[in-house]
Image 1 (tube, helix red, strand yellow):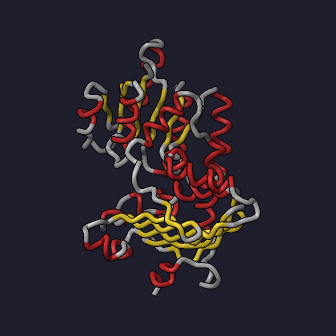
Image 2 (tube, rainbow, N blue to C red):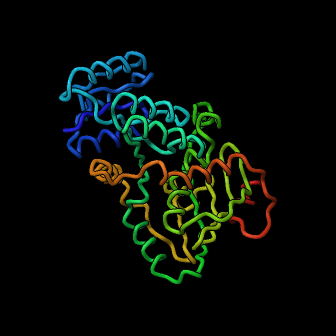
Image 3 (cartoon, rainbow, N blue to C red):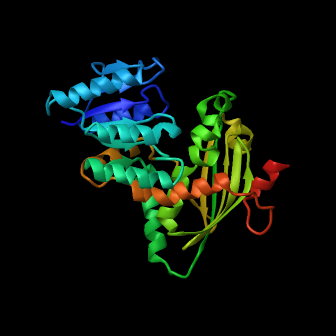
Length: 317
């Protein structure tokens, strides 16, 4: 049985990790979060020790490390705010554990180089959750693309709207220095998916970038992609919005809709299964997506011309 520690137990994504730890036969022995609203622990690991101060959590993990193989931490799961991932992964490896980190792994591609050095120094490994790579519909799409003509480029429209209230901009997620901005915080796994399916990135143009919306054009070896991300509920199509839906996902490939809204429930568990057998996604698998969102964050806006998402110009007006 593997022993786990969890940083960020009070966050939105933490319950999926708790479930994955349990379903893969692991044991959560210690959890940490500055926020003490973590009653969810009782549903998964009621015996786990809990800390609201990182320093005490650090001391506890170190005591377990020195107490013997039975109690020491094997994996540290990291669900903390994005800008803390780098530091918390370093903590995990230097504590004698492997790290399992939520996306985005880091905010900038050069951070990956420093983490690679820590992996070499400690002999421990960093894995991340790139759940769309294990989604059956996305795997099927990739196989279809790979089976097609290598000189054909698919025309792709990616739309993702996940409505958020005013709290979002007042939290760390609304601070671009902490979250990386909307393309990083809610879009990085889609950009990773596009690279996974369509190959190397060749061009990256940004048409819109605000705290709540972003859009642009990406060209890959096998696809030309118009993308649009939004936190505004008014960007959910009216039919779905009238039904009370606040999230909308769409991938259209050469005019054909790819249905991937279902099947998300167990993707973290599938990811953990791969990690625990040495088949997880490491630092290098993250590089293209991290470089993509870093460039989106830093580059100048290009005036609307050529290929742009149909929702992008309307969002600017």
